[in-house]
Image (cartoon, rainbow, N blue to C red):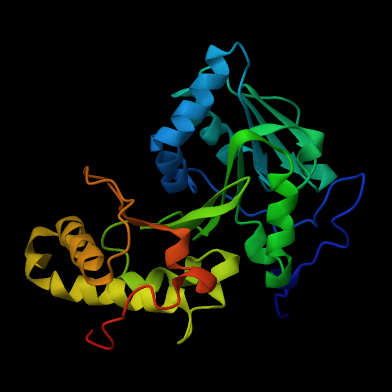
Amino acid sequence: MADHAHNLRARSWNTDGPVGVPTRGTTGYNRLRKADRWLVAQLRVQALLRSAELSGREPVAIDVGYGASHTTTVEWARFLRSVAPSVQVTGLEIEPSRVLPPRDGVTFALGGFELSGMRADVVRAFNVLRQYDASQVRDAWATMQAGLRPGGVIIEGTCCEVGRRSAWVLLDQHGPQSLTMAWTPGCLERPSDIAERLPKVLIHRNTPGHAIYDVLREMDAAWNLAAPLAVFGPRVRWRAAVEHFHTATGIRRMTSRRRHSDSSLTLPWSAVDDDYAAGSFLPTGDSH
């Protein structure tokens, strides 16, 4: 039987109850580790959480749609507490049968994109919107944005079943700020293979004429230029490829130069949004 879960649609964005529809709920241990590591390494997020503690307030983090298991929410809490020990983490599920009693310092509640009426410093919504209709992504974003505290952020994205390939958007109250693509070195034949894990708002735009398509082609071209370094392994080759990428495109660098266990690339949203990126750089063509 065909799986049409990717066409889920919320009935209404204006309701007093939970906003959204139940999803498949699949999850697994350490599945979201790449996004979790990246999030707590961001100076902006560190400052956000620590400033809340310094003001005498416990920071609030909400995990929207944690699925059939609590594991990734509890893992996220551990990452966040490495920055702000007092952070209060709540997992929300729109499916009542999945709501759990508190455990491992995390609370669970019925709710969806409306954040169950809470005000959050950090929101995570992973592998949720991928199952929705693309036309509803912006409404889901806006609903979560309405629940952010000043300076708050949302990390929304998707990953493969075991977490080796992942991509996410970082948003604040003004809108999307960046796109990050991350993968385990050696698990992709070429960087553009990450396209299958792009966030819902971008995945259908990976066709000629769209900014994200051009970005992925440039990533492949840079990877090919770095081929002489393949003998040193995929991590070293990718670090060189990132340098080639930024030189060729002129896109502002957001990826840290320090060594990471993952291969990753963080780009300003303007580089992948068609409304901003038109004419921002000239793709090298099919040099790969």
